Image 1: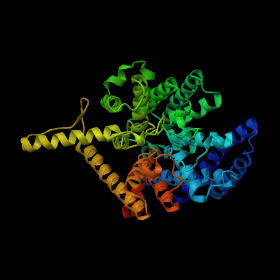
Image 2: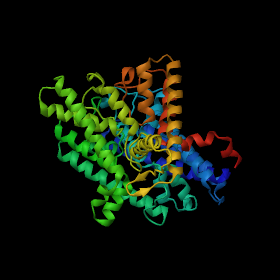
Image 3: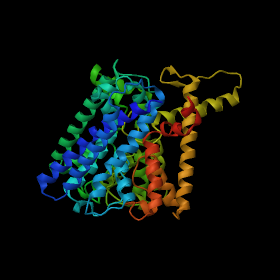
Image 4: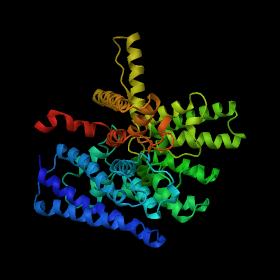
Length: 483
């Protein structure tokens, strides 16, 4: 294991990450909100620690293999989450505990969107901007950015990319060089963010709110600059814009790249995962609309459709924006929406959850087993579109599903061990492991009331969810350290 090379790379990445403390400090100067000092302190601290890690190991040129790639990705998220919490720790108002600051920082960086804060609109503008910026950076994975801008990672770039990129099919590179791939992903990501900002502004948001909400929309994060989230604006147009960009961001970014480069929208129609994703979204909206209409929850059909469309897409894509308290909706809808977050977005998107393609493959495998019961000697292959998948892919999906279920149960039981009630423990685990944000029960609006122990457990759940279980779980196997 090339530990010194890993420390050198982490040092460089921490120095790079320190630059993200500058924009909030500039925002503080513009708005004169008095919140700039913590960001300046965090910037200085991060640069010093990063240089101390980098300088003694600057001549190390070890060859990175897959093991080092996994370790760097995990350490990177843990280390960056810790450094991201520094400005929140240094803040005088609100005065956050260590657990609260770390929870909030990891929630932003992993695009979970769970918050311990209340009275959000009264916070300094710099803090509001920083929270949204964290989600934007976390959305595509800061590792991908690092691969694009740090040539020294060229050797191990592919290993890092495989460990970081969500989804079961990771070897389909869009361009020959991984750095080019990362750059293309970021061009698309930045373009979507700009388009979303302009759309929000045109719909009535001020520039600050438009920029901040575009950050968390394209990242499928869910942080807002108001306690009432998107409900603050009380605008069906803004809700619709949010829905459109959430759906775009929840689609595999390699599809966006293929559509842009070939200038052919048929790329989307030919993708089986995309079609399943749209079907799930449509089904959820229809169910929510039907139940809400039959119970006369809202004044008229237009408002019912607005609420059903927004909440169904927001929760199922794991964004977690709110226009109303969905946990108070009737019958099974709150639980249905929480369960929909387990599916999440498409592989290679900024969404959380298990990803549509994995759930679809589990469904196809189930159908195959049923067919085998009827015709034991027949040979059935699982096809994704027209492509037959090797059994090892299906086995990997089953392995992922079992690991996901195991981590979920352990964290939920641990939360119940802290004194949390069943519904809150279940929904909080689902919300953090799926990088969703809002839950039910005591965590329906915020996570400030739960114990510090529960916050640490849920922070771990966020990292597990962001790194898609295996990337983190592999570090706990003896084989990883022996190899």
